[in-house]
Image 1 (spheres, rainbow, N blue to C red):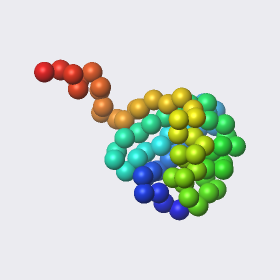
Image 2: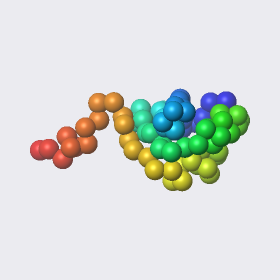
Image 3: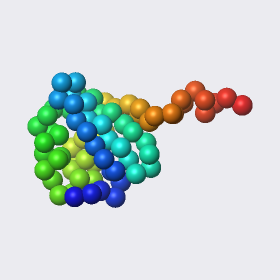
Image 4: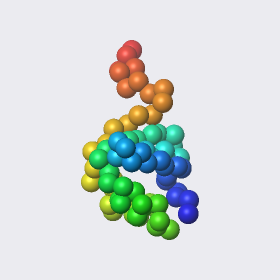
Length: 76
């Protein structure tokens, strides 16, 4: 089932990184996400609710949007 916010996602079991691509184009890696958590997310029909309730702000994350160099934002 598609999500209004999440465009796509991928999980790497070896590193426990859950990658989320938002419709906005931003890409985030959620770290140390157990495989069981990913499987439950994948199985649910309401991805946004599951994500917000059990993953977002529960696991450390970092933005990895391609082409985004945040130091560039502060240059004149």
